[in-house]
Amino acid sequence: MIWLYRLLFLPALICSLPYYFWRMFRRGGYRHDFHHRFGLIDRPPPKPAGTRRIWVQAVSVGEAQALGPFLQSLSARPGREIVLTTTTSTAYKILRERFAGQVLKTGIFPLDFWLFSRNAWRRLNPDLVVLMEAELWPEHLANAQARGVPVVLINARMSDRSFARYRRFSGLARKLLNQVRLILCATAQDHERFLALGANPAHTHITGSLKFDGPAGRMLNTNERMALREEMGFGDATATTKPLGSEKSEERRVGDAPPYLVDALAGRARPLGAPLVLLGSSTWEGEEALLLEVLEAAIAAGLDARLLLVPRHAERRKEIIAVLEKQPLPWHVRSTTPCAPFPVKIYLADTTGELARLTQAADVAFIGKSLPPHDGGQTPIEAAALGLPIVYGPNMSNFRDICRGLEDAGAALRAEDATSVNISLLCLLQDPARRTKMGAAARAFHAANQGATARTVAAIEELLK
Image (cartoon, rainbow, N blue to C red; front, side, top):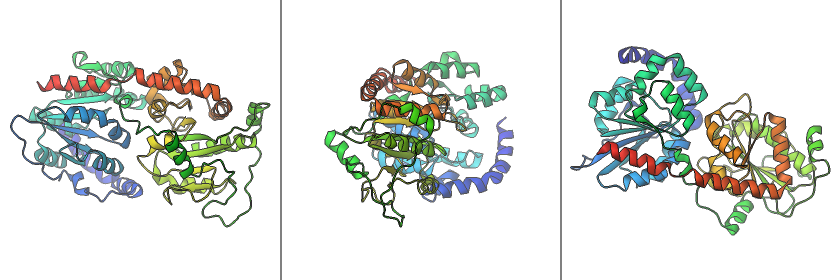
């Protein structure tokens, strides 16, 4: 099978190069250590006697950020050194900034072509390979098997889409999974799916999601939270100043709210003392416009509401700015300057790696990628850890068990469509008692689900004995 994969990989890579380079160019930072993608990672120092080298691969920003407690616990054990790689340039920047002093080396994961993978393996010479979630690279696994190096899949997850794809190629899935020595699943559903695809039951266990143990960022005190809001232009003063790039200086007024939103708020509007901040957490295309609609309806109903947008992909800034330019409320873009030079109603945080800190300025969170045509959802764990009431659409399949737990705990609301999302958000903005109750439930749910890091590290240490 591996030789067929090698024969097919090169033409497939050549055909995909235009998209591959376009995506890297769009995201930026792709030039830094680009040679790593061909397996030309700088050789680390020789291993001291009795030391076991562990190669940890985390694809994306979310995975990289979830690794903090795991890496800290693993690297603290004697005779362990860690090489940490990632796939995206954005995640690589975060790895270098956060973990450079904690691991032996950071790098970019090579393209899964036999020559590039072989280069990386010869240079890194690991004793154990750790992969995350559902990352099963055939060439990478083949190199591990040929060298007798065990592979562990941690925080193992299987989305609806990945499960359907692997089931269509069940023979391939079984072969890949049999090359993994240990599969440590995030949820019971993931455990069932890996077993259904042919994973060895004796080597497949539930350890929980590492993301519950991931740092939610340093908790801000009351004064720091107020200062962060002021930085965003979310002070108590009424925002009447023009947004950057606008040539008009007259007071900006809110248009009429959609009728169904007016009906939802009928008889309930009352001004509140401090501004209410609605967070769009890791939003995708179309969701910013929806949240703008909620904001305008809330303001029309008499609430001092503000909107904090943190898109999943910062490179969408131009697209989102085009949407902001078409609406009447004053706004500011963080990449222009972090501190808004005037009071605003909308703050676009088009940066990477700041979600945990920025979330603490919010009162209510909407979780992105949860409304059609998008599917899968972004993680609600960070918002839960910080004690925010949570709302999301129907398409949260990547976090099905977690969302079910949040809903059962009374910490989150699942809405069936965009209209229901709007109404749920508006009702929460109007109901401080319910926000407090849901926020406390979210914190309790998060605390009750911690401990995956200790279980994961214990399983790896047992394997290394």
